[in-house]
Length: 151
Length: 151
DNA sequence: GAAACACGGACCGGAACGGTCCTATACTGA
DNA sequence: TCAGTATAGGACCGTTCCGGTCCGTGTTTC
Ligand code: SF4
Ligand code: SF4
Image (cartoon, rainbow over the protein chains, first blue to last red):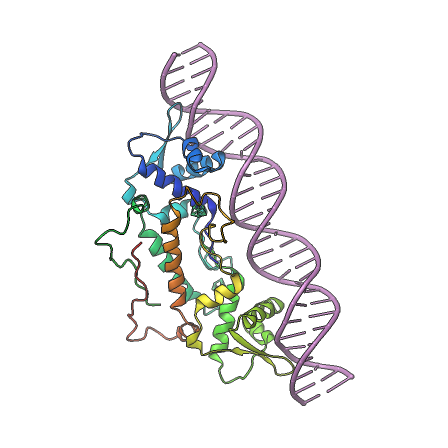
């Protein structure tokens, strides 16, 4: 159920990698690809779309590559996934009025939309910075409730 | 991103329908299908797998059909989705050690697993009963926080 | 025994996904 | 200035999955 595409997966890895190397002004797609054994060309295209969406800054030429457009804290996992996979959501009835024929009779739609928002909220509350810091063992003041659902 | 299969969608609709009609000892797949304009044969197969998983009870022959195996409160949306779509999760690295080659080098894996658990928790906290009751306008004591994530 | 139902396998067209290839363009450094 | 390294982006392709259909079998009731 609910599978995340591998492209978005790769995108998150790359973003995290960039967040971990702020000293480099630019990291090439090839470098990241080799570091994680990701198909280089595919990663390249992913980073391209990410720059087109404004999450990255690119520089061509030698010693070129990509760098985060904003601070790692200001980029959420949600944005990354959204940029790569598009605004697809759990139900099929979200694509501008043209998807599901049951919209009228379906009563399951609204509660699922809530779930959808909840998931989006969770993803939005996770920044690239969080991913990069995750290596450390359980920090102290970590008990901030990020979501609360009511349905 | 994160699309729920239509089969699971149909399954939830059917379950909710059954929960709304407790007076009937059994409702045929055809009835539900016609009520919501769902392809009958497809819905039939969905309900079959649902019974095989123990969520429904079936009765063959005339006036036969399906009925909830347990109380509507005791069946979570998570179980339904799990039964229909299988134990698939957001990352590709969950299928018993055979999926993603990056398991070792990937550092994004664990945080995503947390997200996964969170989503599962949300789905588990929603019962068929909740879906059936959803028609009513905002009840009173509805502010129970169901999830809290820490990453 | 016929109708109405549940079961279950086989099958299929289309869409999405993961990935490759090829070309054009831009920047850098020797 | 020229070669090399990088981004940018289009076209393409094999595989898988999803939604759906078809068919045949078993079971219960009237
Ligand atoms: S309208 Fe209902 S059946 Fe159709 S996609 Fe939305 S939730 Fe699913
Ligand atoms: S190991 Fe990492 S890259 Fe592979 S599927 Fe899991 S999260 Fe994605």
